[in-house]
Image 1 (cartoon, rainbow, N blue to C red):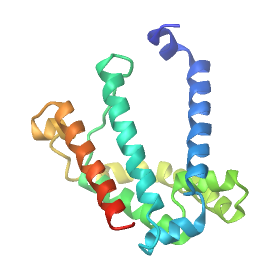
Image 2: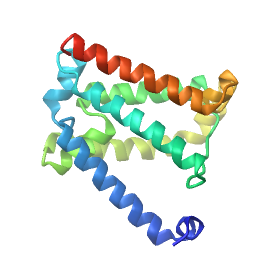
Image 3: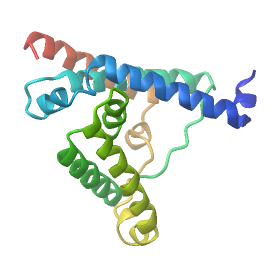
Image 4: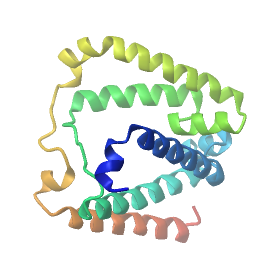
Length: 185
């Protein structure tokens, strides 16, 4: 099956999404970040499992997307960001995280492991998404589009090739891993 055929096949896209979601949940659970105590430990700066998993995901995802885009396997569909959308999104995410102790991905993964406290977060996410969708027309015209970013991507913003950004961020992440190892974090 060619890439273009796969892109046009809705059933294959749904199956890929399901398999990717299962793999994501499995990896979250195996890494320990679906455990409430691990997340609270990260917030208290006593357990750095969450940051290690997130940085690993950023590193693998960043390199993987760059390689797949360079090979023509994926097409990116960037949307112009803004200060307003970033602030509103950060406030909503932060409030939910503070109230529940889980982020959306870890809440879903925790429900999969039987953590019923996380189920309230998944229900809250669904309700919150519905409220946001209902308010979107008003928010888009008043807040979300304020302070548009000057570029869609970091390489565009800096005026450099994507490989330079990927390499630079990879070096920074590896340096952080090294630092955490040295300081026993």
